[in-house]
Image 1 (cartoon, rainbow over the protein chains, first blue to last red):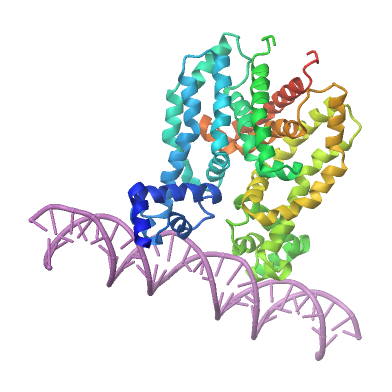
Image 2 (image 1 turned 60 degrees about the horizontal axis):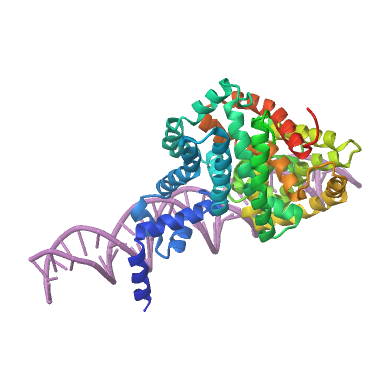
Length: 213
Length: 213
DNA sequence: ACGTGTTTTAAACAACTGTTTAATATATGT
DNA sequence: ACATATATTAAACAGTTGTTTAAAACACGT
């Protein structure tokens, strides 16, 4: 009976994949240092030893998960900027995609930032993803547009900051905002949806001050 | 010899205060769940048992620290909005104060948000501070200004979000931004300083679209 | 049915966790 | 100087941690 159900699950998803999925969920919810191997095993429905049998150690498993999260986290940004759209469209679509992605994975920015700040080993997982970003030519293109005088003159670091602030913070601060304003989960989600349009309008309006409404 | 140094320190600062200060530092750096009582004791230069002798338990100590952090975190916001300045000045000063505060305590937003998300007990510590915010009449005033048509029509939640995003995120994302753009601590701090002006200009420009530059 | 290699488990390991206890040191009033 | 209250310490507690070990269950070609 129990064996049958277990076998069925095994058919749908390999043990290795079950562990990865459980680890992703637990790591993101609690952080690498604030969760236990046994918690991951329980979430995956198996013995602790199996986790180490497949991934050797908790830290190796984390490194694997973290790198794949970083991939997802920066992938859409790179994709948009590798396209051939005009710059204003790129930024608009970038913000919209970011809101879409964060709607599904609201905990990822906090997770990434915390691990980078608190777990020194996490930095290794970001390096391959960084190459992806650099090869996309995102930053070179922005510089070129500024030389043409089409875009407000400001450092690339700060442009990145401007866009990401208005995309990521609203999701990161969800627990804080909910308690400050006393709103429910559902109400806040509605705020997030309409906040996307404000973010697009405000960022574009500031980056291209010569544009007419 | 050793006793002499120890006694001197004791003169400058009571044991209780030393523990509080060590706890603040360790809690903010690592989070409540990801640090040990012995770590706090070591940071304060004393035995573990003393921490519990003064504060009964780790969680009671945390509750105390967290509430005082929340006070600092929201105090300047409340102060500014309780003043009699015109609204544009209030927002400008609010953002500038926020940048000043976060320059000194860059880890606090992350700390607050993480604890609220991961440590259910932390919510209790926020309630007295919330009353402080509500009594200040911050939100009522904003609503009044909107009725007068002086300010862009948008929900208070989203105005809060707009301002806090552009203040807090640049500090929260410091570890991420540093590795993405490969800049040093010092370079990033300079970016933060000039980012303050962008934040003020952009937020004011968006909230008061009828204003002329 | 048997043998072999792979998966999975229960049990154990030493190290570390928050907390408590009992003993020692220090301060203070007399 | 002595007694008493406070402050501080080392040691121990039971429970949990990441990891390892040895045994069991399983798959599968023969």
